[in-house]
Picture 1 (cartoon, helix red, strand yellow):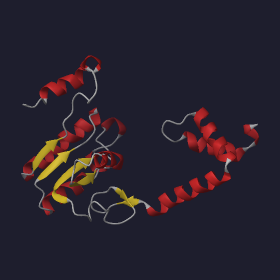
Picture 2 (spheres, one colour; picture 1 turned 90 degrees about the vertical axis):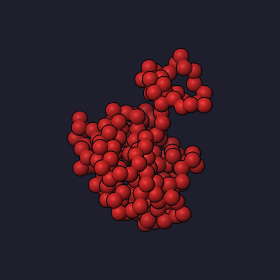
Picture 3 (cartoon, one colour; picture 1 turned 45 degrees about the vertical axis):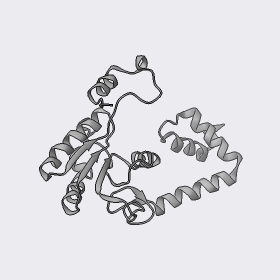
Picture 4 (tube, one colour; picture 1 turned 180 degrees about the vertical axis):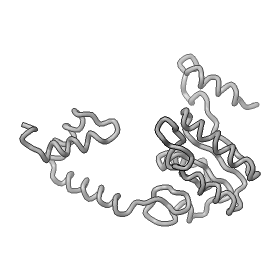
Length: 197
């Protein structure tokens, strides 16, 4: 049946390109959209709206519809820049309501195996921002992966000579977890980063 519907197969093929969506999920989503043409129209309009309206902020490179974004143009502490890999990480930090500085989105992490070097990221712009603005601290909030750690080390190396204070997000045992179920590397980081009470 599906082979007789090239447009449906094309939709399934496009849905499968989304992260975490396999053949069965793509089929389920496609049939759900077919059952409700209104959902399909709304989804199509949303996708076109995102394509036409969302772009990187010219200051921090976070996704936005206005330029500069609401964080860069707002009443935030511009003496502290939090460096993240992508806009999803920025959104996660914003949900915490714990940070009141500004951000810088690298748009990735250093990954030689994937062909991503420092020149492929927004590192030059970060160095320029740090030198031009009265930045006192750079908080490195890259992910705790091999690529994120490599990026953090590289950023530390190139920013140290500027004299700006460089900090790294703390990492360790998650709140509400049992130590016996935490991996050894996380326990090691938690012990190394322990605080006096």
